[in-house]
Structures are given as structure tokens and as C-alpha cells.
Amino acid sequence: MILKICTAGDPVLRQAARPLTREEILEAHVQELIAHMRDTVRDAPGVGLAAPQIGLGLQVAVIEDRPEYVASLSARQIDERGRRPVPFHVIINPVLYREAEAEVDFFEGCLSLPGFSALVPRATNVRVECLDQHGMPQVIHASGWYARILQHEIDHLNGTLYLDRMHTRTFTSLDNLARHWKDRNAEEIHAALQP
Image (tube, rainbow, N blue to C red):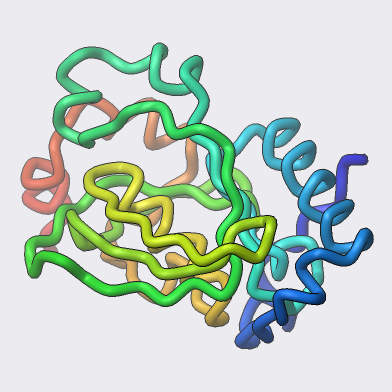
């Protein structure tokens, strides 16, 4: 089932989601929710979807960076972003730790802000402690684009949108991103947008 995605302005996107117990995770309705979230993120298409984005204040997110999404990028873009396919998985009750102080800026979009993007600084390396869809503890070490996806989705679970972290002067429509910025690096974009 494809679920309706909430867009910016919906209060659920600005509220901290509640954690789930292991017993709740194993209930049929939560397992069905995970399957519907998987179908919805694939249909969108996107690389992640958090429960608040479908109107539920629960600490559940699904992540999948499919090979075909990466295949459309140049070798230079893949290398700059540290982007590799990530198989489908679920994070529940995640706690994020930065493993490096280094940050990098890249354009980010969001299914809850359709048609727009902005440069967002994110940590290059993170560790996430969470439960999986079976309620089992997991520790994820991620770098590059995968680290960015995790930070973005965990932000959703805490009521934060990329708007709160973006370089505001870089906010753009997807049409203008393709027209003016897609082949420029972050330094060039920042320089071009200085007042």
C-alpha cells in the first residue's frame, strides 16, 4: 500500500516521535507499517522515509539507496559523495553519534518538501545504535552518502527538517538546481551566492 506523505507545515513533522518497545515492534500492525513504508519510499522514489512523514509520531524509518539511483551518477559524483547502494533496512529508536568532526555540504531533498533542495552540512562519519525490524539491537557505522541519509531520517524522528540545517542562500527549486548548480561543487556554489 502506498501511503500519503505529509509535507512541510504539518505539525507531525515538527514533533519528536516516540520510541517503540520490542513487543510493539513485533506486532502485526507495526510490521505492516514497515512494509507500507517500504512500498511508499520505493514509489516516491526516495532513499529514506520516517514514520512522521506519513503522519505517525513513531521512531521508525526505512532506508534504501537502490543501485539504479547510484547508476545515474557520474564516477566523479559517486566519489565526491561517497555514495554506494544501501540495501533496504529499518531503524527503530535510533541514537546518532558523530564519529568525525568533519562535515561536507551537498544538496539534499526531502519527500516532505517536494520540488526543492538546498546545500546541507552533514557529518561525514556516524554511528547509529538502534533496533531493527525484528526488535534486535544493531550498530551501524556509516560514511559518505549513507551517513547523510541516516542523519536526515533521524532528524525527522526528532522533529527537524533539512530546512533547519541548510545554508539558506542555497535553497532552490529542483528545476533551478538542474539548470544552474548540478555540475558545481559546494565551494563554487557558496562563492556564487555570496551577497
